[in-house]
Amino acid sequence: MNFDLVIFDCDGVLVDSEVISCRAHAQTLARHGYPITEAQVLERFLGVSDREARQTIEREIGRSLPDDFEAQVKEATLKFYAGDLRAIAGVAAAIAAIGLPKCVASSGTPEKIRHGLECARLYEQLSPHIFSATQVKRGKPAPDLFLYAANEMRAAPERCLVIEDSVPGVTGAVAAGMTVLGFHGGSHCLPGHAEKLLAAGAALVFEDMRELPDLVGKVAQKPGLNAGFSAG
Image (cartoon, rainbow, N blue to C red; front, side, top):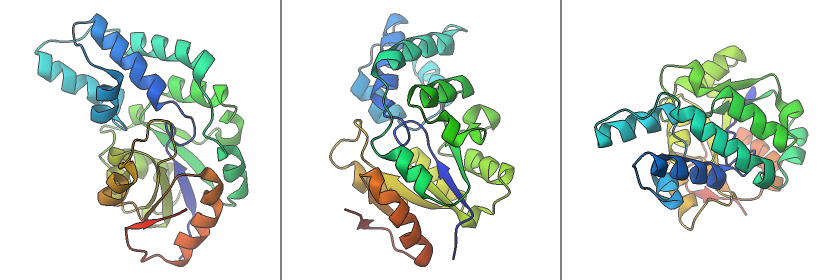
């Protein structure tokens, strides 16, 4: 089996942004009467689209958040990005070394994805094949975004390899019939995160992006690879 497409998540896979995003969400929610810590945002909403996270919170509090809530979160996030955002170590070289078509499929808005990739100097490497959960009805953990990206890139789902760092992302990619490598090298990944990714269906997990090009070849040679293998 050979893969025809590699699909990258953005936050936590390409850019080390999950902690920053959680800080922005926590601060904005607190201003609107929903006290929550960065750690709680990370635990509850890692990999979930902003739209679906908002719907969950509104159900809990029994009222709507302001119409411009997402805009407020975006403004706070972009402010933090300017000073704190970095690319995941080694990811630019890994992308360059993988000789397959590539795209991005992220829960973020198009503006947030682009700004993050530009801050990390990765946008030119991956543009224009960048897809957002705002383009589909259901975000991760539904398979919609991955299937949409595959269709746009003219690749069969079973011949797509997904690089994900979140349980909803792994769950969605597996539901789409794709093979998943779980990355647990971001600053937001706590002990035990690799095991969560494996339990969600990742074919294997790794924590150093320098390993990725070799892992792509390894998984392609072993399409029946059992979950439970940890690289490194």
